[in-house]
Length: 165
Ligand SMILES: CC(C)(COP(=O)(O)OP(=O)(O)OC[C@H]1O[C@@H](n2cnc3c(N)ncnc32)[C@H](O)[C@@H]1OP(=O)(O)O)[C@@H](O)C(=O)NCCC(=O)NCCS
Figure 1 (cartoon, rainbow, N blue to C red):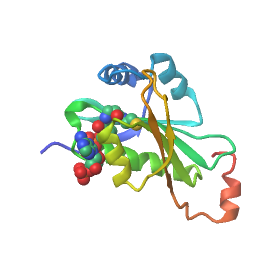
Figure 2 (figure 1 turned 120 degrees about the horizontal axis):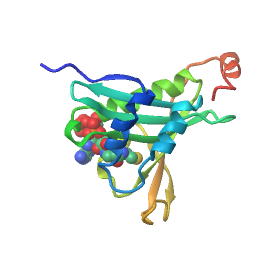
Figure 3 (figure 1 turned 60 degrees about the vertical axis):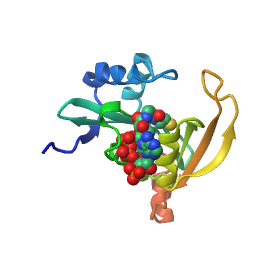
């Protein structure tokens, strides 16, 4: 039996595998420069899923100064590792990171024709918040989805965390 992939913070040494994963998707890919920037960005959470076959997926979460809403900037699973719950685990991990930073909600954008991702978000409690015409590089429309994370934090704690999120 193979062990479940492990989720951990990305490091510089993951860059080649992250780029190789991005190269498998058409359009709107993250570049080496963007990954390097986010690796060094204290307001970004770049997390990878690593299994026996190496890097199998990642997510990139951005925390915004003065906003209690975090943004899921990207999430991807290697085509060979899909359909086994890893996308769901990565999404839950992004939500946990957002909560840990004091955020009370998560937003994301998705192509309208990305049936797998739309199904993942809708199954995970996200609601459609806005239509985004001509949103992607190729002119394709998107949707913005959002989910309240219900922080369970007291007002005082939230104030203490206000700088983080
Ligand atoms: C979207 C993506 C991350 C899902 O990863 P995954 O590991 O295959 O997803 P999971 O196995 O955790 O599936 C979780 C749920 O998502 C939905 N889902 C996933 N793949 C699906 C598919 N091909 N068709 C329909 N629903 C799908 C289902 O609701 C599924 O729950 P279920 O298995 O109980 O039915 C993956 O398809 C991917 O990397 N796509 C390319 C990158 C991308 O589009 N990222 C999103 C950009 S917004």
